[in-house]
Length: 247
Image (cartoon, rainbow, N blue to C red; front, side):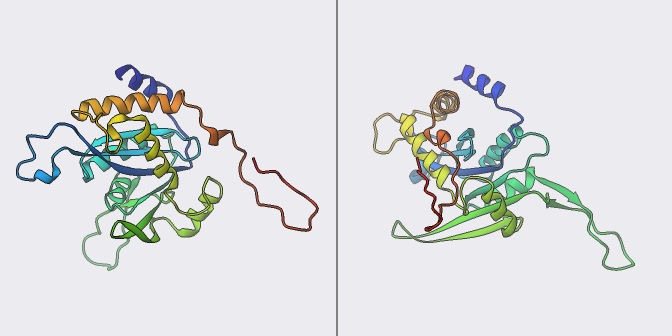
C-alpha cells in the first residue's frame, strides 16, 4: 500500500481538470472504538470521503474519518495539490455544507473592500472566492428513505457559467451521478465497504490500505469502457437524410 501510494503521487500531478465531483459514503468497522464514550450508536462507524474526475475517471483522493469539516478540508486539500497551477475546475457535491467552507479555504483570495464613508478607518480585507471558482450542490430530500425531490443550488459562481462548463464537459446538467457510480465501484472492489458482509476492516489503517491499493488499481490497471466511447453528439432530426449508429 505504501508503494502504491508513492506510485500514485509520482504519476498524478499538475492535472488539468474541468470538473470534480466529491462525495462521502458510510463504512462500518469490525472493531468497536474505545474512545467513543457514551455514544454507543456511533461505535464502529466511519466515513470514506472520495473525489473523482468524471472525464478521465481518475480517483483523485480519499479520506477515512468522521463526517466533519476537518475531513472535508483534508479531501479538498488532496485534490488541490494535484491540480496544475491556475487550474480551478467545476466542483459538484451533495448538500453537505462543509464542502463550501473547504473550497473557499483553498480557492479564495483577499479582497480589499471599498470605503463607504470618507471618515473613519479603512475596512478590513475579506476572504472571497476566486472569480473562476464554480461550485454547485445537488440537494436531495428523502421521505422514509426514498428520494422525493431533487434541487440544484449554486454556491459559488453563476448558473450560466456552470451550465457552459457542463456543456463542454461530461454531463449536461448539474448531477452527482458519476461519483455515486464510483461509490458503487468502491464497494465492489473494497471488501470492507460492502454491505452485509463478514469482511469488515478492523480499523482505519486497514481500511486506508485497502483504499490505497484500489486507487492504484482503479486508475492505472482497470480498463474503463466509458473512456472508449465517442463523445455524444446531437441526434439527427428526421427528414435530413442522415443516420447515425450509436455504439
